[in-house]
Image (tube, rainbow, N blue to C red):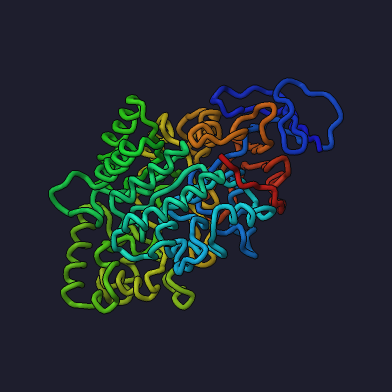
Length: 524
């Protein structure tokens, strides 16, 4: 089928200024780009006054956990309506593959954040995904998943023999075409891994010239994975840990969702950005991705230290334990520049919808409790599985600075929730980048570059991210001048995403979603 995109401003993903012209695709390939294209076509899409771009790429996603569900459409529709055609998946140490066939811990895959319908090998994932995908996926193997396969959430160090079993799982995924791997140092079980295990994982990825993405151990000035006093800002120590692994393994690194949680963390922006650039000048490949939102989603146990999570339920209830815990959280909160008013409840349970969309300090006041006790009550009510939104990741000027930095690319790190308050990033994140670009005077081609060609170059994805003859026909047509979002309504569809094609098939036409399973698992 030949489809002509007529008379749009061609933004090719290189960062070059738009040029008015036509673009022709046939089936799933781009046939011709630019100029006036004559001939017979099955379909003509009028793009006058619009921008014709490569399909937008979400550099950090977890949507590989929803593709094989009966209700999968609800999890992908909002991303296509943002113009996203490809997502980097398997981040924060969690992938739905990388688990031994006879593992006793399959139910723990996803770390409590996600649930894999049928966890297994990477080869099984590829086969199972055929014909089911709404978007393309660029898969990474999660360190958390391979560790779960071996020992579940056991905090004990792995033996050399167990690490070897982990590496066999990594090898299987990389040999079958995965693009790399991921760490999640704030989550179980990744938080328990010792250096020998971390080095081994990164070195195994490096053997295949893969990339490693890292959810660092701290995204704030203080974090409960480090001593509270007598250290540099923990967010900077976390970057040093990532750099140490990079230096030891020689792997390419992507620092996931660079944020600076809490006002006391904001002075770390300058030294951290300098360190990123310094290491690139030394010849290392390390960069980062970021949000357009000032808040993000996390688990309700975010404020709990690893030593507390490792305790039995009985030991957690001891008076001495609670005194120690409360003292640590109180000190941490003060040092962070965050307070309980910065934590909004997304979901506790189906039996406690009254807490959804409300901040912890307000709930505590209403129930006549201290905010600390209210928080611990909510943890218990949710069986430690609740979800929250944390504010003060940045301010608007920080986002502008990151958008303009050469080492940033863009991501959502969001998923559609089955219950509770939705994360606006799942519905509006990429259009909000465009809205911000208009406000800040950033040329549209520079924003598109970070969402397409720059992301493709970083992850080394073939035949995507650029409008070039012979490349795959992932196309997003936007109306930059009329792009708009309403962040006060998180699940509201944005305005300005006109047409979206995935592998040559329309998924959004004239702003309306069309059901189509034309996404693919992309291979390295």
